[in-house]
Structure formats: C-alpha cells, structure tokens
Length: 298
Length: 298
Image (cartoon, rainbow over all chains, first blue to last red; front, side, top):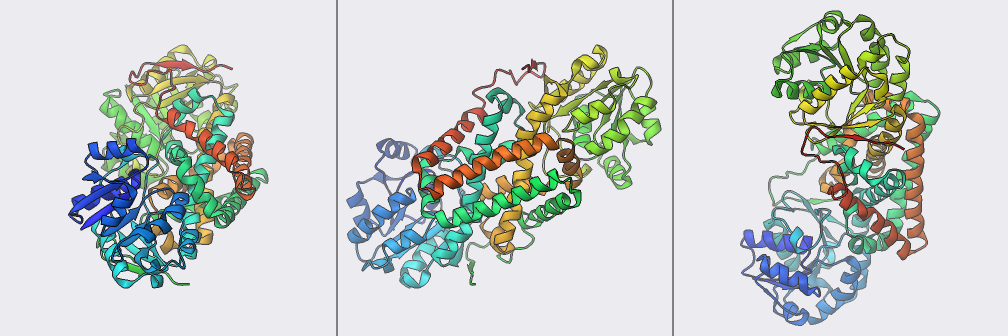
C-alpha cells in the first residue's frame, strides 16, 4: 500500500516513521513545498521517495495531509479533485469544523476522513520527527457519518497501526474540547513566557528556571506558523476557554487580595483532582489495545 | 558531621539522599512531627535515625529546615534559641523576606543562612524523595551580609556537594524573582486545571490529554499545604505577577477578537525567545562546576 505524506514536519515525519515500523506501507512518498524538508526527510530515511503534489496524490492509496490548518483549507479540495476515486484521504489538523465545511459538498467528500491524532511536541521540522509519538494516544475521527465506511475503516486501521485509540466526535465537539485541552494550554504558555520575560532579565530566568517553570513554559517554544491558523480557525471556542481561564486566575488573585485562605485552599484542592485524572484512574478506555474505539455523544 | 533534617518530605528527603551519596554527612538525623513520614524515611534509609526536635537540633552541626514556610516562621526562632552556638542553620523555603524579618534581631541571626534551593516536583512526602533533584540547579542565598561567613561557607559547601550553584540576592529580590519564575507557574497550572475541569467531563480530559496539556497542568497536582503559605507570604509580588500575566492573556485574547494576526504572531514570536533561554544559550553561569557562585545586583 502506498501512503503519501504531504508535509514532512514533526507530525507528518513521525507518522511516516511509525507507519514504516508497523509495516503498514509498502511505499512512503513524501511531498513538501519546503525542499530542505524534503531533502532532510530523504536523508533521514523518513520517506522512500519524494514526489510533486500531483504525482504524490495520484499514486497514493492513502493521502495524509500534515500541514498547517490554513494550508489544509486550500489543499484539501485540490486533493479531492485529483485523487484516484478509490483513494482515502485524511488530515491531522487540530481544528476540524472549518476544514470539514470547506469540502462539505465536494463530490468526493466520502473519501475524506477528518482526523486529529492528539500528540506532538514543541519542536518542528523533519528532524523533530520521533518514533512512538502516537503510542497510546487518541485519534479523534469527526463526522464519521459523512465518510464512506471503507475509508473510515482503512484510516482507522492506519492510526491503530501506530498505536492510537479512536474517539468519534462531531467536528464541532472536537473543536470545542480541543480548545480547552490543547489550544488553551498553548496560549497559557505563550503568555507565561511573555509575562516572565517582561519582568526578569534572561540570565535570571535561565539560571532560576527549575523543572516546574520549564514544563509549564515548554509549549511557548511552539511554532507560530502552525498555531496562528489554529487559534484563528477556532477563535470562538479559544476565546471562550481563555475567558474561563482568566476568570479562574482572577478568582485566585481575589482570594489572595482578600486574604481568603479557605477559598484559596478550595481552589488548589479542586485543581489537585487533576492528579487522579492525569494518573488515569478515571478512564474507561482500555488503552493498551490499539483497537478500542469510543463514542462521545452529548 | 551531623546533619539534622527537619521535615522529611520531598525536599528534605531528597537533600538527605544526596548528602548521603556525597558523603557529606557522617550521620543524618531526621525530625518530623508526622510519625508516618519518620517511619517511612527510616524504612527507605533516607536518614540514619530519628530524633525529637530538641535532640535533633542540639546534636547537629547543620540543621536543615525543610517544612512549609508558615511552619518555618514558628520553628526557626526556636531552633536558633536551642542550637549549640557553633551550629549552622539553613532552610529551603520558597519565600525569604518574612522568614528573615522574623529572626532579624535574634542574637544568633549570624548562624542562619537563608536559602532557596530551586528544584522540586509536584509530588510530596518521603516516598517522593529522589536522588539528583538538585544537580545543576541554583540555590539562592539571601542577605548574605547578615550571616557569619563560616556559616555561609559551610552551607554553600553543603549545597555544592549536592550539585548546586549558588546565587546571591537580597531576600526582597529573591521573593520578587521567584514570584514570576516559580509561584506564578504554579497558579497558572492550578487555574488551568480548574478551567478545564469546569468545561469538560473527566473522561474526555483524560483520554485527550496529550503531552502538551500534561506538562502544562502537571504543577496542578502540587500540595496546597506547602503552596498556600508561600502565596500568602509573597502576596504582593504574586499578585503583581498574576496581574502582568492576566494582562498578557487579555492581549492575546484581544488580538484574536480583533482578528489582528500580526499582533498575535508578534506575541507568539516573542514567546518563542524562551526557546533560546531554556536551551541555555544565554547563561553566563558555568553550570557543570558545582563551585560557581553568582552575584545578582540591581
């Protein structure tokens, strides 16, 4: 089976590495407008060969679109125009609603399986691609009723092969949930970095940055070219989640200003519940099997 | 040399482990009002023996106070009242100004070396103690002109032995800087956890929490009993840093609402500078030697 990866950055490169390891693809074809990325991906053996957009798309059994979400909007319709009628197409964008609406009436909408494999690091480019990035993580598949079942099955099989579990959501639910769980934490890290750099000289920050600061500010290193379009496409939900977050910060600040210790303790104790959640005592997903799927309904 | 550790939690326990590994102490004596912690620390071999407060303090060459900062305020004067006149005393509190002012006029103020070894994890208790926690991290020593030079020398030698570099600051500067670099990131994590739990059911959070969310919310697991008194003692600077942070979040939110992309990119690009800082390209501290000291002056 031929898999064409469009976009040979952190996510595209990591998917390629894992698909190779899983023996899922007989041939991995790389497409990228950044020729240095193409060269690097070939040098690192991430893909077997490179192709231009037209060739790469026409030859593939599966096309994986791993480019920034604003670029997905412009490229996805062209890909659906170009593919062999049997080809399955998926993307890895962190937003789904606008992307799905862009191809809503495309005659080949059924070939497209909107997906969001939830994993990443703060690094970018083919050199940042790592094996095992998706192991035991969740891949959200959206609006599954709009994709033909054969395409859903093959794309799920692909994500399963790299260790992912599948969760079904509407594209609206995915954008709402992801705003809180992923987009908001990135903005909090950007703002934390800016706030700390406002008030301290960089030598002091570096010297004093202990593990806590490092992990909290890590995402501030993330690529603006990738995240800008995500925040823009998901503006309403991102603004909503930012407003809720700021409300919680103000509440904490008020508890300090009012010397309301019991309130402050209550806020911290409530946050401590995250310990159980992140330690995984509350999930009903069996994560070790890469064959679980889960339906989120409201 | 006998070292008495008062408080056998994450920090006290980790210091004891490293002091043993460094052969710095001939005997490690543990004091804790929590008898389960004492039992656990003995069982894990963190200390050689336990003692009550009076014995532990009287016998020691060095007393290390590793208890919450509100408890330091009440215990430090008693320790200075009790010690052998040759004993050196240090603490590990994250705040320094109020603690220092509490013993400002104590006849044995010179025996006390106010310190803040900047390291930690989100876990607590003797089971959380780990080796190497302080390696290549900074220990802030405050108001050094108020401690007798022999006591400064011995306490620095102790922190050097567990791999730390020393930075001198006034207790006011330490509280100001630490508010931004450590206290603020903890509050941002508490608030992020609360905001996300406000808006999502816990199964969704767990299933979807990718690496980015996990690292950003990790500190939300931190102990309220330890952090409450820190925020309270450093209220003015913590409120200041929260206000600056909220201002940056509002700025980001405005750039989204106003669809001001160039502004949003500017904010992200500025935050990206944290990459260089955290990758350590800007420090003039030679971190590999545990014998460097650095003077921060304004």
